[in-house]
Length: 256
Image: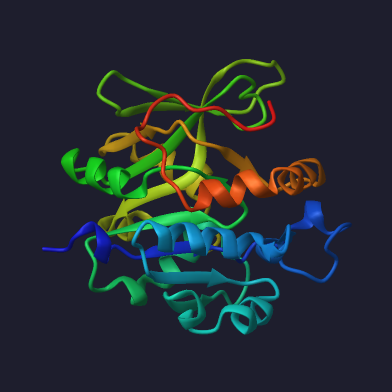
């Protein structure tokens, strides 16, 4: 039986990063420096600290820079394989393209390469299996969820709906960009350019889609403002990357 320590992590690092292009004109967003290290190195160190050492990077835009920096991962005591998009395929399309690297696993972790969540990934994997879930989404509490849209869950942690972004400042649970997938999800992803959030998740609500609340730090670097805030939080981010939150509960978006 596969253990949680055998569970691979798929990192979505192929995005164009257009909103940061003014600051990083020739650097892929995951390689954006935060302090003295790249944001992607922060994620790798976090995964390694939680015992997850088999990584699959879904690359695309400026992929060669990412592969050149991290190679096979031995410098970080992990194993890295690369699944390179021939053209932009969206978050779901990138996951499906990586299928050949996931043949020997029943479940796998997926992480956005431009956001950081301080969470207990091992507990998330165990929860996913206890629930016999097809998809488990890490969620955090945001005082202003309007930018992200919200995830609505029932008392058992099952996702009942997704609400789109609004113009009103309202609190709610937001998708933190970390998931556990059963490998069967690959059969639910159509070919072509496909988004997990917009095209796949809403169509799976008649399946078992669950959410687990996390209480640690959450920040993304998708905009110049958020990237600037990540620089200010450098010390806290690296401390958080090497630790776990003690339990899964209501969290908060950093900086709100």
